[in-house]
Length: 383
Image (cartoon, rainbow, N blue to C red; front, side, top):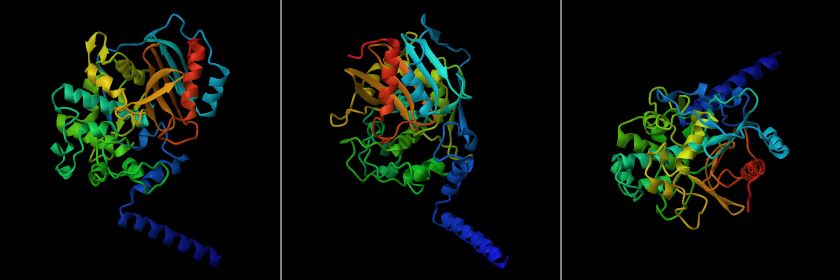
């Protein structure tokens, strides 16, 4: 009994000391991350984690523009390979849109067509779109405007807003998804995101090569807020969510109830068919119901590689060639995808709990499989 009391005493003392050290050395966010992730039975961030964070609302308009159902709506069943894929990786929504109509949709588990789940880095495509809109609205001069115009902290840097959107910022950010001590983890769980970002220095020559850094998009989001004088959620609502006739309000995670800075690099909560609207907007070069919502030249630039050496990325959009076809896509952690093939007028949306193994900054095998199985269902040539 005495040994047990001694053991418990020193265990409590050790835990207290560790917690104290985390706060002293400014790693208190790790405790928040542990509470949100491990104490809820998860191993990483998860798709329905919004209740653990403050959120802004991305408001829908007074009128919605519902997707029509295709004449062949749900007449073809998912292939056995697709069903296995969806089961293995915990898909919660799989939608195929053909000729701007819902051709196939299926939802899994407790999720349905209205369920809000986390976009993760698909949000980067929205932020890039907001940059284009801010240029169109006259808030930002062009892709070439220096970030130092908005944040004097970068007066010695030559980084432009276009460099941020195309992942060529030169920031000393390290994109790491497993270490609790990484700046990526800090950005997701810290309560002062602006401080984290503005501590980042430009250490490489900007505008010369692609390097995927979430901090680039976060800084871009902060610049858009400063340039427009509007919160990101509000600007997204008025620029795209309402004009595109979204069916539901969406959420955008914030760092803290006091600072209320949107996590621009991630974390928009919405459903598959509302996420798909942004893919359709880019497929149609910025037009929606005949109205030019976003400049067509900006869209074209966004879905074209900036650097020949890095054909996988444009301005906020991933680019993939498969079986002789060019796809552009929004991508997020754990396998959140809006995949667009404009010539075939096809949009594929997949949301879920996990993806196949492989680097987060490369195209994992599941992406190719989701495309291949959709095309088998559609019976469209992949050659």
